[in-house]
Amino acid sequence: MREGLLPPGRATAATQAEYDETHLRRLRLIRALTGARGLSVASAKHVLDAMTEHRTDLHQLLGIAFGIRPPAGVTPDAAEGGAPAGANPEAAALVDAMGWSVSEHNPARQAVDETLRTLRSLGIAYDWEALLPYAELAQRTARHDLEQLETVTDPMEKAERAVLLTFLLEPALMALRRLAQENESAARHGGGEHTST
Image 1 (spheres, one colour):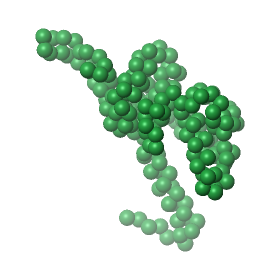
Image 2 (image 1 turned 120 degrees about the vertical axis):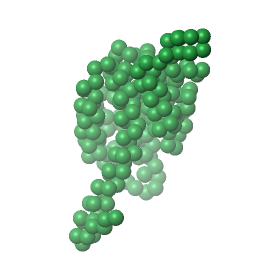
Image 3 (image 1 turned 90 degrees about the horizontal axis):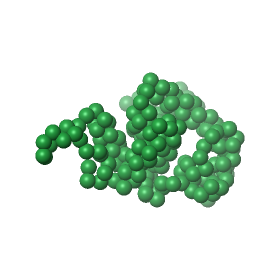
Image 4 (image 1 turned 180 degrees about the horizontal axis):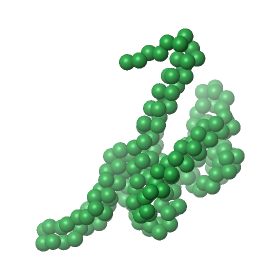
């Protein structure tokens, strides 16, 4: 509460307060942002303040929820805000080719361009067009993500759930990809033998 992440409860005595389900939901979100996602307290406060500011605009709320960049390889504080417009030409070409409506400041654009530059620096000829099949899969995943949120009616609860599902499912989605890759490798190169443990 000292950092302003959690609103005060309803005072029941001089040194006691009562908290409701809204407080508990907010506390779970704070734990997800700072614990599971690794954001600093200041970054988590920035996200929560932005969510509160845009509480009546569902698209803005979900944009905040989905636009938080993972901390791997970059400090969460530095990642906020994304790159300047036009700074990520390959991501822009990919977004245009997919017909997506995505903010020019979404930090994921920078991640796409950085990844492609790194691959090329290692001698792997890869450009944005090679990512199109992955973008199509990502579109299907995004559609499924939002369909899961349709049953939630409160905009803030919907945004909170989007944050939790996005952050907590990412490692499982990457793990599923690795499992599928092993299965595909076994089918193509394993002589029909699958190893199971």
